[in-house]
Image (tube, rainbow, N blue to C red):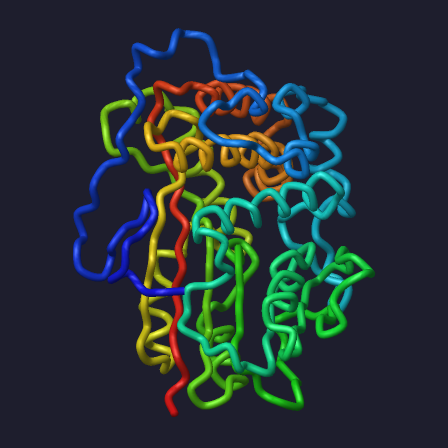
Amino acid sequence: MSGPETTQPPGYEDTQSNPTQPAIAAEDDAAFDDELDTGSLAGNSTASITSSVLNYRMVADIMRTEKANMLSYALHPWFWKRNLLTGGFLPKPNDEREQERLDIHHHIFNLVLGGELYCAPISNGVSRILDLGTGTGAWAIDMADKMPQAIVIGTDLSPIQPLWVPANCTFEIDDFELDWRYQYPFDFIHARNIEGSVKDHKRLLQQALNNLTPGGWLEVADATVGVFCDDETIDRAPNLLEWKDRLIEASHKFGKPMGVAKHYKDWLTEAGFTHVQQEVYKVPFSRWAKDPKLKELGAYQQILMLEALDAYSFALFTRVLGWSAARIQLLLAGVRKELLDRKFHGYSKLYFVYGQKPS
């Protein structure tokens, strides 16, 4: 994919040269009444929402709060992503709903990049590709289809990937925080959504550098845990801001911090990578944006956020912060209402940071 010097899609931030970013143009608030945005995404006239993604979870289903399911996330260890190698756990869910959510997130990344799978200027002749924290394997599978000459290896703590995959794609149960023992180096290493999964980012980046061929590239793509807003409507989301602050606090106490994607560029440089670049994209929390593409992204992001609240909050808030289930439910009820408020012009940020191993 071309770099920031070319025409970029809506929501792109040129963080290399302009630290002050233009605000996203919002739809006229007069077009919205005070009702919450609970309508089906299928009625979105600005974009055709594909049925393959819509079938994962209708908005009405997402909004249904099941107390027993919430408590399961908090108390039952098998709803946490289990490290089969060391017996440890990550404060992230691992069930079918989370797998569906990961596939929706993959679709969001594809929309943001206009169908591309990466930003780094890798050549079409790469022969070995590693996908760290592959999740459902969607990126690795798409990459294997895109580059049939390359061997693509996806690793994760959990064996949740499909059995039927391209012949040049394989999956392994592995913990990328342990010592890497690959026999041959890689031309391209990709990691996505690792916030909250890494104890020592600098060690991880050093291992990636050591396992790249000279001239090979590492790309880290992450949707940082954050709440951003370019106008006074941030005042409409006090619960969302509180949730974000407590989630980051809990993740740091747990030892696998969230909200750190803003440091990736500096960390890659410190690790010894060259030609380090950073691209940042704004993704609205709902369909409030005027631009049709950003409105479509907001529709998917709203599903993603609503689906993630229970699973990502209950484990950390109960086990780490010591909150009661009732206190969490009260906060999340407010967060849901704010995420459905199209008069709140909030957004998330996707970071794409890539660097090259010196030749």
